[in-house]
Length: 116
Length: 116
DNA sequence: TTGACATATCAACTTTTGTTGGTGCATTTT
DNA sequence: AAAATGCACCAACAAAAGTTGATATGTCAA
Image 1 (cartoon, rainbow over the protein chains, first blue to last red):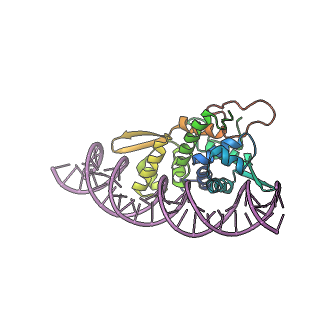
Image 2: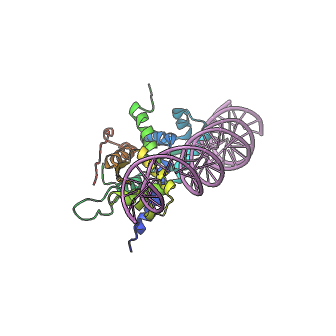
Image 3: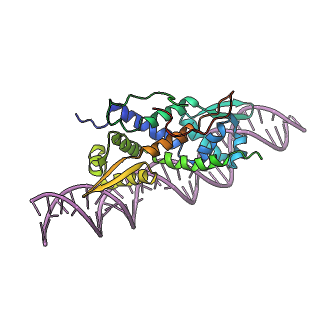
């Protein structure tokens, strides 16, 4: 009866941890910061971040696996960009952690990109 | 000249990684989910999460160190609650990762709790 | 077609995180 | 005052994440 954590909460829990794990590393955040201005190929990121190729590749994979990147290949270049949708999901998961309103009715399940 | 990552970006980067690291573990997310409904003492969390005391204590420390928890002691109990302010900061950092607008002027530095 | 480049992936290793069981110290209960 | 409770913290260990250098593959350039 006092099922303390509801089913959606349990579902969200794993998602939240997964997604935020991808955002929990400085190099990866730096990658995203660079991609804010638009698509970049790996070699550009490599120069801009001054990171070893395999290291960068590793971090790109983490971001990719988390669904945070769009990927495109052209010739011998690999281009990455931010997957805005997924970033919005992260946003929603975060908003869902906000404390319930004290007086007033229960918090509604919040949905995509409420701000900006 | 092409200082690819601006100073605020570099500052944000560390903050983002630190804060999101705290959110990158299922147990910790579960703690926050429980605290959405308000303050809890450790022993309550312990039961509700079915977690060993020292394990829970460890995760609470991580959340505390990230500034995400308010802490209060009463008698032999230790009460925790969500630090909403800090959660809002996390929110802002996340919103700051959104890609710049394509046409139109540059993204403004976004501030606290724009939604909900 | 040979050589240089871009990039993914792998294995070995290092570092960081997380778990477990224990100890110590308040505080409360009996 | 003795026993029990709540909780922080520590040390030893386990597991996960990150780094590095090497190798493999595809593509472009000479």
